[in-house]
Image 1: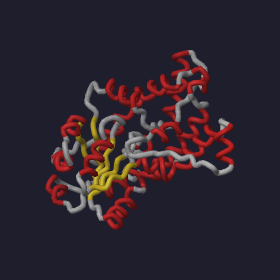
Image 2: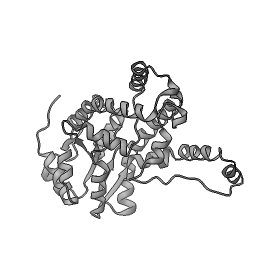
Image 3: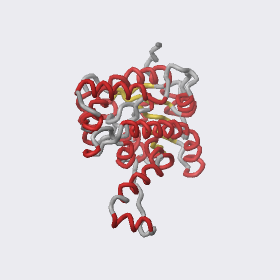
Length: 292
């Protein structure tokens, strides 16, 4: 697909710079987007925030209320509309969404039945597609309502699970590629352990394709000899995330090759302000595009 900026000079001179950042969780997508926003003339559109407010907000709130209803004191206050319960999701704190999606396993350790976990995963998939397709309307909204011409779409790590980079007519990637320059933050070799450490410290919402999730789950049960109700939810989450790192890399690579450009995690770490970020992206446009 033709990029919306065909050269470094075109990007530098563009009166409206529009990008969509993608890559594994923990590589600095949100940090880079926040840095651009801090520069004063970039609108930051967070796909995960949009998911957690516009599309999953009621599910998240209902889950919080269900927990509160287990306590008689709070249950009575809720029934009489004496208290309000809601999530305080932010760009930097996606815990309400992560908590709702949950982890399968032992209910005594906060685990969900696998069937319920899959149901919530399906809700997330639909929400993520909708939030990604909302990028174009938000570009218009940012400009017409707030006066921002520069726009950064901060995508979730699972974008590659809801899009098909090999399909030139893919709805999600066509919408993003028509309206933004997709920018992949490439993970360096040997960085898996650090990504896993960051995931453990600050777990982000994770969506898995149904067939992959089934394989991961049943393979884990076979490997450990555990039953569904005896699986430690945290241990399975780390196991699944470890496997998904290798699964997603070629998908991200295909997205960058056919739909956008690539920057490295080291490039991102060297960025200090919006000007640095813009120059990094311009330089990425100057690199030869690799054919499949």
